[in-house]
Length: 451
Ligand code: PHE
Image (cartoon, rainbow, N blue to C red; front, side, top):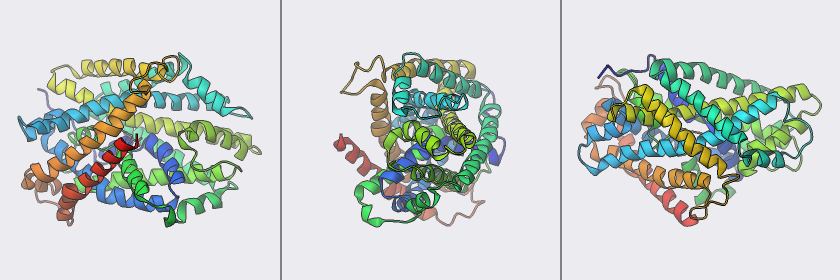
């Protein structure tokens, strides 16, 4: 086989992994969770989850990927041949594929909202709930946007690791960070700025209970793209000098910073408009915000126009870099294990994601009556992948690295064969052996029984 490609630079490694992590989860889900779970108290708990669970699990995925230089299924096979641990790899590839199928639907909405915003269709006093509902249930519009979005992902993937994934991350991530900076500065001038900041920064621990803690762990997992095969696959392209622990910490810091800054953008806007609550739920970005932007900027419509356009471009870019990272584990698997050319593998993944993605999109409209276990296809994909397979995969990764893998191998990977000093190695092992798997197991059981 030809030599396997690698990321070409350290900054490329961090930006690609951060591109995977920063996604709709940061800009959309995080502020909603903060709004629902008591503001700053949730943020503090979230930070602890990222540090004590997220980072160790990320390092573990990096260890599996980089020590084998193989796709996720190949990696588990190499490390534990002919054992049932292989399920860990299979889980990664499957969950990445299934999440892609509905992720591209929501990603398509972000593309539509970016276009509609610049075409000035999201201005003025209109019923934004009606606007959103008629868009998502249309038989063709969201489908077209999801397909266009997927073709963009395909375009990057077929160009390969260095010229596709790395180069696009180096281009898109700085753009994304720049847009965030502009929007944050803009939100300083909003009338609800102080109120929004107080809401985000003043901790109120009376709201904290077990559910809040569990939501924080779940959010950290989702936001850091853990247990989906993505980071494990990206790590298989890391060079021998990449410092795994430092990379995991940097990626987690950038991801958390973007999530918090998204709150800095959204809450001042929300608090500038009377009668809007900060925990609006999933409708927040597509229904509440267009309305909020219009009212908050009604004196300066041009700034409102730019603010709203940039905000949806931000959402779109974040979704694009995440979707690329969901495509790669499946493509790499087909290419390396099923002996297809990379191009063919990518075409197969793109076309099957489009077929299932279109079905998911239609399930929110014309096919809404078709239900399995009482759920439409979109919800079913979300439930099976995010609520069932994902936590199980997370537990498997922790148990595999914490209990099964040879400690010497893990130590050699984390310290780059003893050339780095890693002061917290024993703490790291303790966290992946005990704390992370137990925390995920509790969430899993709670999610199952809350249905
Ligand atoms: N971490 C991404 C987010 O915050 C979601 C994601 C899931 C990305 C799976 C890649 C893989 O939205």
